[in-house]
Length: 134
Ligand SMILES: CC(C)(COP(=O)(O)OP(=O)(O)OC[C@H]1O[C@@H](n2cnc3c(N)ncnc32)[C@H](O)[C@@H]1OP(=O)(O)O)[C@@H](O)C(=O)NCCC(=O)NCCS
Image 1 (cartoon, rainbow, N blue to C red):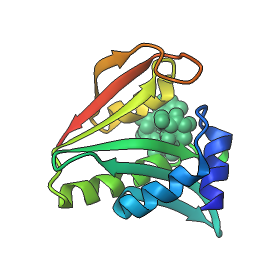
Image 2: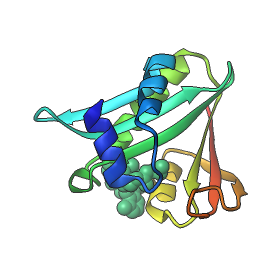
Image 3: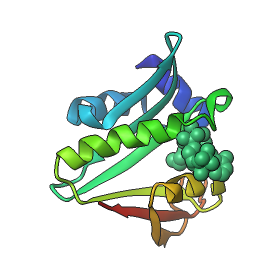
Image 4: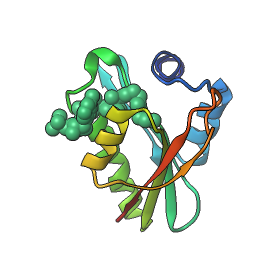
């Protein structure tokens, strides 16, 4: 868990209370995925089930040195597999409007921008809401 928290603080702009990771893991363990290479965690995804129809991806991060090697896609596909088994129909997430790489990544997997939220982040950056309908 410590490695996931460390990677989150290195790679994601938003700061999260470390207890949140434990809370999410305990609430919906099927939404918690890590990628480990040589005993080192190099990527993770945290998703939750909002209700019987909708799941949400809260965090996805791959260590810089390991990006563009398919790890993010692998984490997302693993999560999607679990979500399909749960019979959930929609997955939503927020992504910074200026995170072009993140948006491209999610578009590659079929997510579409459906709305936006002004000043969504702590630093007042705007967010897009992206959605994948399964
Ligand atoms: C977004 C992120 C998770 C992608 O992880 P990754 O392991 O690098 O992604 P993959 O190698 O699986 O890429 C899959 C596809 O996404 C797209 N993609 C990924 N990184 C991209 C980039 N930097 N620029 C453009 N497209 C990109 C490509 O279409 C890629 O397919 P291709 O390799 O066949 O071209 C990673 O860049 C990251 O951790 N970024 C910082 C945190 C973040 O932005 N998280 C998401 C928003 S919360």
